[in-house]
Image 1: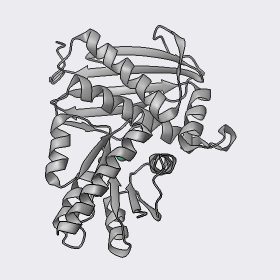
Image 2 (image 1 turned 180 degrees about the vertical axis):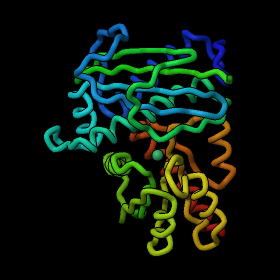
Image 3 (image 1 turned 120 degrees about the vertical axis):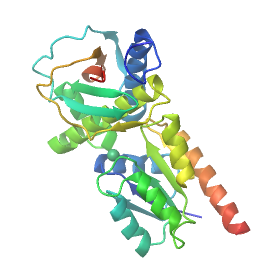
Length: 157
Length: 133
Ligand SMILES: [Mg+2]
C-alpha cells in the first residue's frame, strides 16, 4: 500500500495502472499506438508543449500533469476530431490534450482508488508547479510523438 | 426507429468525438443535438423531442449529476433515458448516478462497439417501460 490517502495499491501497481490507462486512452480514443521503445522520464525537452494539469480531491488528493510533444498534440487532435492535421488549430489541439489528461487521470484513479469519491478539476495550464508528495512519473514514445506524465498524491497536512 | 440524441459535454471536441463514434458504430440518428452544460441541455429538452441523453459529469453551471436529478424529477422529461459518459469509474460515483436516475454509465475511454451495445440496451429497456407504462 502507498501512503496516499484512499489509494489501495502498492507503488508498482500505481505505476502500472498509470501506464495502462495512458496506453488504453491513446489507443481507443486517439488511435495512437506505442512505438515499442520507452524512455526514462526526464526534464521536458523544448519541443514539448505546455503542461496540462488536473488536480483531484476527495478520497485522495493530488495532481496529474501531462506534456505532449508539439507534433503529437496535432496528430492526436486530428485523429480525435477526424480532421487533417493542417486543419487543426491551436485551441482544438489544446482542448484535445486537456481531454487526454482528464481521461488518463480519471482512469488511473478509478483503478488505484476504486472506493474513493473523487472530484477532478478542469484541466488547466500547469507551468511551474513543483511536484510534491508521492510522485509517479512515466514517459511514452508513440508512433506520432512523445508523452510525459506525472501523478502526485498529496498527504493531509 | 431512428433516435434523436442529445450529447452534453463542456468540451466541443468530446461532443464531436462522441457524435462521430455513434455514427461510426452504426447508430442512425434522426437528430443529434449538443449542449455544453446542464442548463443548455434542459433548454434543448424543453423545446425538442429527444429520445436519449448522453451526459458528462464535470461541467460548469448545472453539472451532469444535477442534470440527471432534474430530468428524473421532471414529469415531462423523466421518461427520457439518460446515460452518463465519464472518466470517473469509482464504485461510489457509478452507484450514486444510477441511484439518482441515470439508466446507464459508460466510462471513458470506451470502444465504439461497447458504447453502441450499452446504448442499445438502454433504449430497449426504455421502450419496454413505455410499452408497460
Ligand atoms: Mg467535462
